[in-house]
Length: 453
Image 1 (cartoon, one colour):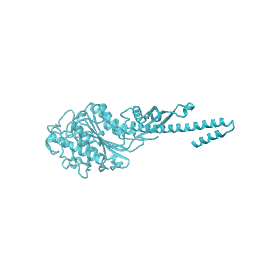
Image 2 (cartoon, one colour):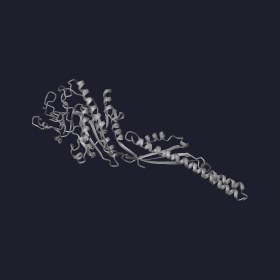
Image 3 (tube, helix red, strand yellow):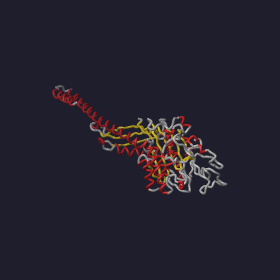
Image 4 (tube, rainbow, N blue to C red):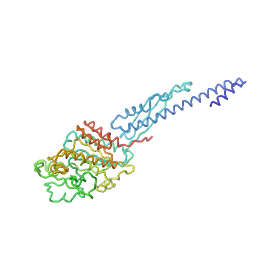
């Protein structure tokens, strides 16, 4: 370009024609204009590239918290951080984001003004560049189990809040699953034992159904003891290794079966405080929400018992043992199956307890099934078992999330925080709003985002 300009000036110097001067002048102006346009266009392209990259990053960052934050506020915050005013003299002007009904797709655009250099000679002082982006949210292929506290302390408003928050998580995951990735979710309600369901007799020892167990006027509701005699209470060993004994609360001073008002079952009798049955993993949203809404609060707290059954529900060693949809789809899948994740959410409002007033999956404290008859030592044993189960799941690359609802000790918070895959997968919540936000944040964490346009 410099050589062309030099040649043009030499021609102008040698020219003897009066007509050459205006022609050369016009040519010179055109050449200068072309140079100016090229320079300004290059600057505009650099600004547009910077703006587009910032918009993609802002959309991905904001989309990762869409269920706990305002998407517009978050996008503007990240744009301010990623596209600083002053880049090549530009100024960010407009940022906009719109979402579809289920928040699975976000369309974004942004504009910036760029001051011109050479084009200003021709009256164009600034130009506007625009960037567009589209972010798609979808759940990764996933097996997820919700291990939820159904103990007596959850009665009333706490249980209402838990149902609402758990349903929100289910809605988030199903609504985000716009690309149709495999999504399977199960439910393990727990108290002092877990109910595996009366249809799972093959998991049980024969003594669960013999006449030697006096079930009064009722029958076994599905709760089972921990496999405390062999140490398999903390393993995912299938029943082919060791079967389970039925949970049975005898007619004794802590549980009189005689009543004229409530009958035998969850509140009295051999099945006292036997919680709602496990819901095996399913891709049917209605099945899940129905099970969540049917939860009731009774009994004492053995978090480790809920956790280990959550693991068994997701462990490939238990394939073909849960029946129905799980068997039909060869679930659970192997660990580390390509394009599939496994996750367990453990939620509780209290600390592990064990005493002589409640017959649990470890019987009475005085029976010494935890290797001690001292209450404090028994709680330590339950806590250690929870840590063992969590560590075993994490060793298999199962994502573990933990939620504490309500006030608790520092030691218990540490227990649950260490149980989680990483510190920010632990959610200490006190209020209903915080519990809701915790489940929503987990939904965001489990979502997969990609720039789709």
